[in-house]
Image (cartoon, rainbow, N blue to C red; front, side, top):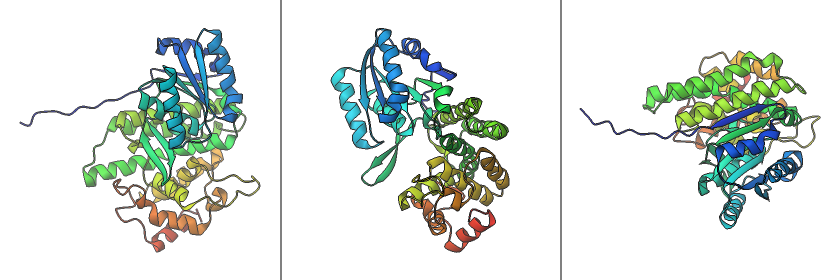
Length: 362
Protein backbone atom coordinates (compact mmCIF):
# COMPACT_ATOMS: atom_id res chain seq x y z
CA UNK A 1 0.00 0.00 0.00
CA UNK A 2 1.31 3.42 -0.96
CA UNK A 3 2.13 5.61 2.02
CA UNK A 4 -0.17 8.61 2.55
CA UNK A 5 1.83 11.85 2.32
CA UNK A 6 -0.77 14.44 1.40
CA UNK A 7 -0.93 17.73 3.34
CA UNK A 8 -2.81 20.97 2.97
CA UNK A 9 -2.93 24.34 4.69
CA UNK A 10 -6.17 26.32 5.02
CA UNK A 11 -6.33 29.81 6.52
CA UNK A 12 -9.68 31.37 7.44
CA UNK A 13 -10.76 34.65 9.02
CA UNK A 14 -10.66 34.34 12.79
CA UNK A 15 -13.44 36.89 13.22
CA UNK A 16 -16.12 38.21 10.89
CA UNK A 17 -18.12 41.21 12.04
CA UNK A 18 -20.93 42.35 9.74
CA UNK A 19 -23.60 44.88 10.63
CA UNK A 20 -24.70 48.42 11.35
CA UNK A 21 -21.99 50.82 12.58
CA UNK A 22 -19.54 47.99 13.26
CA UNK A 23 -16.61 50.27 12.36
CA UNK A 24 -16.72 51.44 15.99
CA UNK A 25 -15.44 47.99 17.03
CA UNK A 26 -12.14 48.25 15.15
CA UNK A 27 -9.89 48.79 18.20
CA UNK A 28 -11.37 45.87 20.15
CA UNK A 29 -11.05 43.69 17.07
CA UNK A 30 -7.38 44.53 16.56
CA UNK A 31 -6.77 43.84 20.24
CA UNK A 32 -8.26 40.34 19.91
CA UNK A 33 -6.39 39.27 16.78
CA UNK A 34 -2.93 40.65 17.57
CA UNK A 35 -0.76 41.78 20.46
CA UNK A 36 0.83 44.37 18.20
CA UNK A 37 0.01 48.07 18.47
CA UNK A 38 1.77 49.36 15.36
CA UNK A 39 -0.95 49.62 12.72
CA UNK A 40 -0.96 50.69 9.06
CA UNK A 41 -4.27 51.90 7.62
CA UNK A 42 -4.28 51.55 3.82
CA UNK A 43 -6.90 53.39 1.79
CA UNK A 44 -7.32 55.47 -1.35
CA UNK A 45 -8.25 59.13 -1.58
CA UNK A 46 -11.99 58.45 -1.49
CA UNK A 47 -12.14 55.65 1.10
CA UNK A 48 -9.88 57.58 3.44
CA UNK A 49 -12.65 60.16 3.75
CA UNK A 50 -15.40 57.54 3.92
CA UNK A 51 -13.94 55.40 6.70
CA UNK A 52 -10.14 55.64 6.93
CA UNK A 53 -9.98 58.86 8.94
CA UNK A 54 -12.56 57.59 11.42
CA UNK A 55 -10.65 54.32 11.90
CA UNK A 56 -7.39 56.19 12.49
CA UNK A 57 -9.09 58.37 15.09
CA UNK A 58 -10.60 55.39 16.93
CA UNK A 59 -7.33 53.46 16.97
CA UNK A 60 -5.27 56.43 18.20
CA UNK A 61 -7.82 57.06 20.93
CA UNK A 62 -7.19 53.47 22.04
CA UNK A 63 -3.41 54.01 22.19
CA UNK A 64 -2.50 52.36 18.89
CA UNK A 65 0.47 53.73 16.93
CA UNK A 66 -1.14 54.43 13.56
CA UNK A 67 0.50 55.11 10.21
CA UNK A 68 -1.39 55.81 6.99
CA UNK A 69 -0.69 54.83 3.40
CA UNK A 70 -2.76 56.07 0.48
CA UNK A 71 -2.71 54.09 -2.76
CA UNK A 72 -3.99 54.96 -6.21
CA UNK A 73 -4.39 51.55 -7.89
CA UNK A 74 -4.05 47.80 -7.44
CA UNK A 75 -0.65 47.62 -9.10
CA UNK A 76 2.54 45.72 -8.33
CA UNK A 77 4.29 49.06 -7.81
CA UNK A 78 1.76 50.12 -5.18
CA UNK A 79 2.18 46.78 -3.40
CA UNK A 80 5.96 47.21 -3.33
CA UNK A 81 5.49 50.69 -1.88
CA UNK A 82 3.37 49.26 0.96
CA UNK A 83 5.82 46.39 1.56
CA UNK A 84 8.73 48.82 1.89
CA UNK A 85 6.71 51.02 4.26
CA UNK A 86 5.83 48.02 6.44
CA UNK A 87 9.49 46.99 6.66
CA UNK A 88 10.78 50.50 7.40
CA UNK A 89 8.21 51.24 10.09
CA UNK A 90 7.95 47.91 11.91
CA UNK A 91 4.22 47.59 11.13
CA UNK A 92 2.41 44.67 12.81
CA UNK A 93 -1.19 44.97 11.55
CA UNK A 94 -2.42 46.04 8.10
CA UNK A 95 -5.97 47.34 7.70
CA UNK A 96 -7.21 47.52 4.12
CA UNK A 97 -9.98 50.13 4.15
CA UNK A 98 -11.66 50.41 0.78
CA UNK A 99 -12.87 48.56 -2.28
CA UNK A 100 -11.30 45.77 -4.29
CA UNK A 101 -8.11 47.61 -5.22
CA UNK A 102 -7.26 48.63 -1.66
CA UNK A 103 -8.06 45.21 -0.24
CA UNK A 104 -6.07 43.40 -2.95
CA UNK A 105 -2.99 45.56 -2.34
CA UNK A 106 -3.33 45.15 1.43
CA UNK A 107 -3.82 41.38 1.42
CA UNK A 108 -0.89 40.78 -0.93
CA UNK A 109 1.41 43.09 1.04
CA UNK A 110 0.38 41.28 4.24
CA UNK A 111 1.12 37.94 2.57
CA UNK A 112 4.58 39.07 1.44
CA UNK A 113 5.48 40.49 4.85
CA UNK A 114 3.76 37.81 6.99
CA UNK A 115 1.75 40.44 8.88
CA UNK A 116 -1.79 40.34 10.25
CA UNK A 117 -4.39 41.65 7.82
CA UNK A 118 -7.88 43.03 8.51
CA UNK A 119 -10.29 43.52 5.60
CA UNK A 120 -12.51 46.60 6.01
CA UNK A 121 -14.64 46.91 2.84
CA UNK A 122 -16.31 50.22 2.03
CA UNK A 123 -18.15 48.66 -0.91
CA UNK A 124 -18.93 45.10 -1.96
CA UNK A 125 -18.41 44.74 -5.69
CA UNK A 126 -16.89 41.22 -5.68
CA UNK A 127 -16.06 38.27 -3.43
CA UNK A 128 -12.45 39.32 -2.77
CA UNK A 129 -13.43 40.66 0.66
CA UNK A 130 -12.31 37.43 2.32
CA UNK A 131 -10.58 35.48 -0.44
CA UNK A 132 -6.91 34.37 -0.46
CA UNK A 133 -6.27 35.84 -3.93
CA UNK A 134 -5.30 39.30 -5.15
CA UNK A 135 -5.74 40.73 -8.64
CA UNK A 136 -2.95 43.17 -9.47
CA UNK A 137 -2.09 45.26 -12.50
CA UNK A 138 1.21 44.50 -14.18
CA UNK A 139 2.97 45.65 -17.33
CA UNK A 140 1.58 42.63 -19.17
CA UNK A 141 -1.92 43.07 -17.80
CA UNK A 142 -3.75 41.80 -14.71
CA UNK A 143 -2.20 38.96 -12.72
CA UNK A 144 -3.83 36.86 -9.99
CA UNK A 145 -1.62 36.15 -6.99
CA UNK A 146 -1.81 34.01 -3.87
CA UNK A 147 -2.38 36.31 -0.92
CA UNK A 148 -3.33 36.24 2.74
CA UNK A 149 -6.86 35.50 3.81
CA UNK A 150 -7.77 38.20 6.30
CA UNK A 151 -7.44 37.35 9.96
CA UNK A 152 -10.65 39.35 10.36
CA UNK A 153 -13.33 41.01 8.26
CA UNK A 154 -15.04 44.16 9.54
CA UNK A 155 -17.95 45.04 7.26
CA UNK A 156 -20.03 48.05 8.25
CA UNK A 157 -23.33 47.72 6.39
CA UNK A 158 -24.15 51.41 6.89
CA UNK A 159 -20.95 52.45 5.08
CA UNK A 160 -21.27 49.86 2.30
CA UNK A 161 -24.92 50.83 1.75
CA UNK A 162 -23.79 54.38 0.90
CA UNK A 163 -21.64 53.15 -2.01
CA UNK A 164 -23.26 53.12 -5.47
CA UNK A 165 -25.79 50.28 -5.60
CA UNK A 166 -24.36 49.16 -8.93
CA UNK A 167 -21.28 47.90 -7.04
CA UNK A 168 -23.35 45.75 -4.69
CA UNK A 169 -25.30 44.29 -7.62
CA UNK A 170 -21.99 43.46 -9.32
CA UNK A 171 -20.77 41.73 -6.15
CA UNK A 172 -23.93 39.64 -6.06
CA UNK A 173 -23.46 38.72 -9.72
CA UNK A 174 -19.90 37.62 -8.93
CA UNK A 175 -21.21 35.27 -6.22
CA UNK A 176 -23.96 33.90 -8.48
CA UNK A 177 -21.24 32.92 -10.95
CA UNK A 178 -20.15 30.27 -8.42
CA UNK A 179 -22.87 28.00 -9.81
CA UNK A 180 -21.39 27.48 -13.31
CA UNK A 181 -17.86 27.71 -11.82
CA UNK A 182 -18.54 24.67 -9.64
CA UNK A 183 -19.97 22.82 -12.66
CA UNK A 184 -16.73 23.57 -14.53
CA UNK A 185 -14.75 22.27 -11.57
CA UNK A 186 -16.74 19.04 -11.46
CA UNK A 187 -16.21 18.63 -15.20
CA UNK A 188 -12.44 19.03 -14.80
CA UNK A 189 -12.52 16.51 -11.95
CA UNK A 190 -14.32 13.93 -14.08
CA UNK A 191 -12.40 14.42 -17.32
CA UNK A 192 -8.98 15.66 -16.20
CA UNK A 193 -8.74 14.09 -12.72
CA UNK A 194 -8.27 17.53 -11.20
CA UNK A 195 -8.31 17.70 -7.42
CA UNK A 196 -11.80 18.50 -6.18
CA UNK A 197 -13.23 19.45 -2.79
CA UNK A 198 -16.91 18.75 -2.23
CA UNK A 199 -16.79 20.86 0.94
CA UNK A 200 -15.50 23.91 -0.95
CA UNK A 201 -18.03 23.34 -3.73
CA UNK A 202 -20.94 23.21 -1.28
CA UNK A 203 -19.78 26.43 0.39
CA UNK A 204 -19.55 28.20 -2.98
CA UNK A 205 -22.99 26.98 -4.03
CA UNK A 206 -24.44 27.94 -0.63
CA UNK A 207 -23.13 31.49 -1.07
CA UNK A 208 -24.76 31.73 -4.50
CA UNK A 209 -28.02 30.28 -3.21
CA UNK A 210 -28.13 32.90 -0.45
CA UNK A 211 -28.19 35.61 -3.12
CA UNK A 212 -30.75 33.75 -5.22
CA UNK A 213 -33.06 33.16 -2.24
CA UNK A 214 -32.98 36.84 -1.23
CA UNK A 215 -32.87 38.41 -4.71
CA UNK A 216 -36.27 40.09 -4.22
CA UNK A 217 -34.95 41.80 -1.07
CA UNK A 218 -31.69 43.08 -2.57
CA UNK A 219 -32.50 46.63 -3.61
CA UNK A 220 -30.91 50.11 -3.67
CA UNK A 221 -30.79 52.07 -0.40
CA UNK A 222 -31.81 49.06 1.71
CA UNK A 223 -29.14 48.31 4.29
CA UNK A 224 -30.48 44.78 4.81
CA UNK A 225 -29.48 44.10 1.18
CA UNK A 226 -25.87 44.61 2.19
CA UNK A 227 -26.34 42.20 5.10
CA UNK A 228 -27.35 39.32 2.80
CA UNK A 229 -24.87 40.17 0.06
CA UNK A 230 -21.73 40.64 2.15
CA UNK A 231 -22.32 37.42 4.09
CA UNK A 232 -22.57 35.55 0.78
CA UNK A 233 -19.36 37.17 -0.51
CA UNK A 234 -17.48 36.19 2.63
CA UNK A 235 -18.66 32.57 2.40
CA UNK A 236 -17.52 32.56 -1.23
CA UNK A 237 -14.08 33.76 -0.15
CA UNK A 238 -13.90 31.05 2.51
CA UNK A 239 -14.78 28.44 -0.13
CA UNK A 240 -11.62 29.43 -2.01
CA UNK A 241 -9.58 29.07 1.18
CA UNK A 242 -10.94 25.54 1.66
CA UNK A 243 -10.15 24.64 -1.96
CA UNK A 244 -6.72 26.23 -1.89
CA UNK A 245 -7.54 27.81 -5.26
CA UNK A 246 -10.14 30.01 -6.94
CA UNK A 247 -11.80 26.96 -8.55
CA UNK A 248 -15.09 27.08 -6.58
CA UNK A 249 -15.70 30.68 -7.61
CA UNK A 250 -13.94 31.04 -10.96
CA UNK A 251 -14.59 29.10 -14.15
CA UNK A 252 -15.22 29.88 -17.80
CA UNK A 253 -17.35 32.90 -16.88
CA UNK A 254 -14.33 34.50 -15.17
CA UNK A 255 -12.09 33.67 -18.13
CA UNK A 256 -14.64 35.45 -20.33
CA UNK A 257 -14.59 38.46 -17.99
CA UNK A 258 -10.79 38.64 -17.87
CA UNK A 259 -10.63 38.42 -21.67
CA UNK A 260 -13.04 41.35 -21.92
CA UNK A 261 -10.63 43.30 -19.70
CA UNK A 262 -7.74 42.24 -21.93
CA UNK A 263 -9.58 43.45 -25.02
CA UNK A 264 -10.05 46.90 -23.51
CA UNK A 265 -12.90 48.92 -21.99
CA UNK A 266 -16.39 48.67 -23.31
CA UNK A 267 -18.55 51.50 -24.59
CA UNK A 268 -20.00 53.94 -22.09
CA UNK A 269 -23.14 52.84 -20.33
CA UNK A 270 -26.14 54.79 -21.53
CA UNK A 271 -27.32 57.38 -19.06
CA UNK A 272 -24.55 56.53 -16.57
CA UNK A 273 -21.70 58.67 -17.83
CA UNK A 274 -18.18 57.35 -18.21
CA UNK A 275 -18.49 54.11 -16.30
CA UNK A 276 -16.91 50.95 -17.62
CA UNK A 277 -18.28 47.44 -16.90
CA UNK A 278 -17.44 45.99 -13.49
CA UNK A 279 -15.85 42.58 -13.01
CA UNK A 280 -18.94 41.10 -11.36
CA UNK A 281 -21.22 42.44 -14.07
CA UNK A 282 -19.11 40.72 -16.72
CA UNK A 283 -19.04 37.48 -14.74
CA UNK A 284 -22.82 37.59 -14.39
CA UNK A 285 -23.34 37.72 -18.14
CA UNK A 286 -20.65 35.07 -18.59
CA UNK A 287 -22.60 32.88 -16.15
CA UNK A 288 -25.78 33.07 -18.22
CA UNK A 289 -23.90 31.75 -21.24
CA UNK A 290 -21.78 29.09 -19.52
CA UNK A 291 -24.81 27.80 -17.61
CA UNK A 292 -26.53 27.36 -20.99
CA UNK A 293 -23.53 25.35 -22.25
CA UNK A 294 -23.77 23.13 -19.16
CA UNK A 295 -27.43 22.48 -19.93
CA UNK A 296 -28.38 24.07 -16.61
CA UNK A 297 -31.05 26.57 -15.60
CA UNK A 298 -29.54 29.61 -17.30
CA UNK A 299 -32.91 31.39 -17.24
CA UNK A 300 -32.81 31.32 -13.42
CA UNK A 301 -29.36 32.96 -13.51
CA UNK A 302 -30.64 35.61 -15.91
CA UNK A 303 -33.83 36.26 -13.94
CA UNK A 304 -31.92 36.57 -10.65
CA UNK A 305 -29.50 39.07 -12.18
CA UNK A 306 -32.45 41.08 -13.48
CA UNK A 307 -34.07 41.09 -10.03
CA UNK A 308 -30.97 42.56 -8.38
CA UNK A 309 -30.44 45.04 -11.20
CA UNK A 310 -27.30 43.58 -12.80
CA UNK A 311 -26.82 43.60 -16.60
CA UNK A 312 -27.98 40.59 -18.63
CA UNK A 313 -27.29 41.85 -22.17
CA UNK A 314 -24.30 43.29 -24.03
CA UNK A 315 -26.13 46.60 -24.36
CA UNK A 316 -26.78 46.84 -20.62
CA UNK A 317 -23.19 45.83 -19.92
CA UNK A 318 -21.92 48.52 -22.26
CA UNK A 319 -19.82 46.21 -24.44
CA UNK A 320 -20.10 45.82 -28.20
CA UNK A 321 -21.48 42.60 -29.68
CA UNK A 322 -18.22 42.09 -31.54
CA UNK A 323 -16.21 42.23 -28.32
CA UNK A 324 -18.55 39.78 -26.55
CA UNK A 325 -18.04 37.28 -29.38
CA UNK A 326 -14.27 37.74 -29.42
CA UNK A 327 -14.06 37.32 -25.63
CA UNK A 328 -15.96 34.02 -25.85
CA UNK A 329 -13.76 32.73 -28.67
CA UNK A 330 -10.51 33.70 -26.92
CA UNK A 331 -11.49 33.08 -23.27
CA UNK A 332 -9.39 29.92 -22.93
CA UNK A 333 -6.24 31.97 -23.56
CA UNK A 334 -6.61 33.43 -20.05
CA UNK A 335 -6.13 30.16 -18.17
CA UNK A 336 -5.11 27.43 -20.67
CA UNK A 337 -4.36 25.15 -17.70
CA UNK A 338 -7.91 25.44 -16.33
CA UNK A 339 -10.35 23.04 -18.00
CA UNK A 340 -13.93 24.33 -18.33
CA UNK A 341 -17.06 23.83 -20.41
CA UNK A 342 -15.28 25.81 -23.16
CA UNK A 343 -12.92 22.87 -23.66
CA UNK A 344 -9.24 23.22 -24.43
CA UNK A 345 -9.56 25.32 -27.58
CA UNK A 346 -12.63 27.45 -26.85
CA UNK A 347 -15.66 28.14 -28.99
CA UNK A 348 -15.72 28.81 -32.70
CA UNK A 349 -17.02 32.17 -33.82
CA UNK A 350 -20.23 30.57 -35.13
CA UNK A 351 -20.78 28.73 -31.85
CA UNK A 352 -20.21 31.94 -29.88
CA UNK A 353 -22.68 33.83 -32.05
CA UNK A 354 -25.30 31.11 -31.59
CA UNK A 355 -24.74 31.04 -27.82
CA UNK A 356 -25.18 34.79 -27.41
CA UNK A 357 -28.39 34.76 -29.46
CA UNK A 358 -29.88 31.71 -27.69
CA UNK A 359 -29.35 33.34 -24.28
CA UNK A 360 -30.42 36.83 -25.38
CA UNK A 361 -27.06 38.36 -24.41
CA UNK A 362 -26.88 39.90 -27.89
